[in-house]
Image (cartoon, rainbow, N blue to C red; front, side):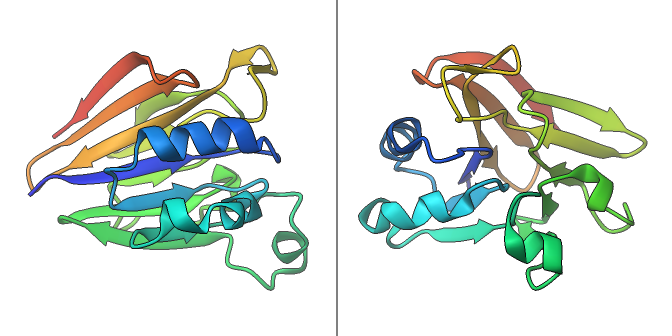
Length: 164
């Protein structure tokens, strides 16, 4: 069974780019927001209705700073063990995780470190920020592989990765 996961990060109040991504990827069952203004998701209840939404706070969130919100969440989908965080420096253990989903740098990337993948979908803050174009990612997960598509704010795939 193929499960769609929409990965968003660093929206920083840009409702237009967030709404476009939510509408475009409406077939995704899961939506993960990896911090810095995860409350932006609250503006679109109709677009997230019926989906599993999991969020972690970014470094600017009061709940992140005072510790009242978990900086790390663990989720298992189709046998794949995900760890969600905004800043990878908050990850204390790589045990029992296949892929770490994070934001913070605004740079879209997927790299393997030891036996764990680090995936950052980029940002939707503005058309360009910190020298990087706006982007998000869609993960298609089944029991044997993850297919990761990195998409521009316009919905054009600019990189694909496969994790087996």
